[in-house]
Image (cartoon, helix red, strand yellow):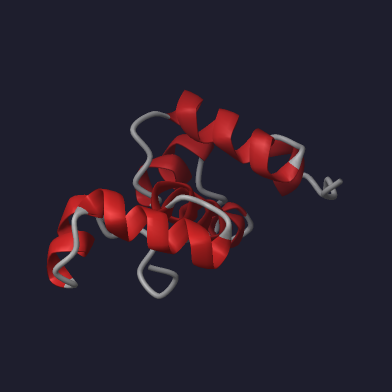
Length: 101
């Protein structure tokens, strides 16, 4: 998941690949990591977005919408809310030199 965070990861597909029910896989994952598999996937996408937000693409910075789309979020609004909840500041504030905390 960390190696390919923008892939469309589904708990049901991951569970089938290891011959477990989605509920059982999620329970085992939560026991091992302290978070749900879905939360881990969203967090991996958010970590990937940190790189994209500061990346110069053809002489310009990508828009928040472009980063949101590239990271597989359903909307820019959802991405921004998740980013702020995870890192304590919004994507534009981060791009403009804001620090976490």
